[in-house]
Length: 245
Image 1: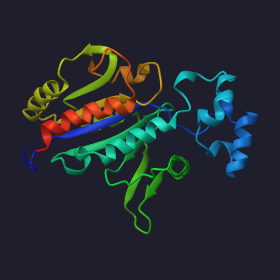
Image 2: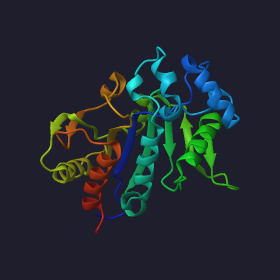
Image 3: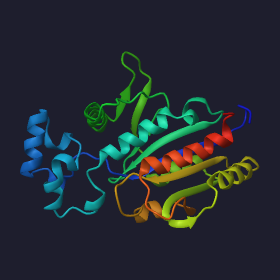
């Protein structure tokens, strides 16, 4: 495959469990104590069940089973940014996070995320506050919260197919074969983006909003898989197709 084609592969970590403290929890004593230790206002820190589990459980907040797991997003982003698909594939690969609070975060493929979890949380707290992170001393964007809805983002790409990955989907025998046929089909049309939705939450299923955006729901296993392992399988399949390994 040459570098002249216009195929785009888009990854969307959907319903991602990363957010600042919701209004419903902002006055909880556990939240206030942790914010005080960090030297920040409660509304400026990231919800993390490691520290805020009791606050989440005693609240009336919705989707409790999905909240407070920014570590899932951290691992997923590191995996994608480390991949050969991002670094060497002859295609455009885009990464977005769709959060539980319906924010859209764009991640530059050139971003070098902190590998230390606490530093990552600090970076994300700055991002939620400033909406924009750039390279030090340079005005080159690395992370941005976009003024878009999920529907707006999808419309921007006018995709060939929007795939959701879940064990509730149709079980595939061979993911690589499936994606190879899809890529071939997309390259023959004017719609040359493939959108991949991977859940960024610890348990449950895609929200109704996300489900409505998916054309085809597929499964790569009969048993539940973590976000990172699912991404490993998907990225590996794309690499076999698109890169001369």
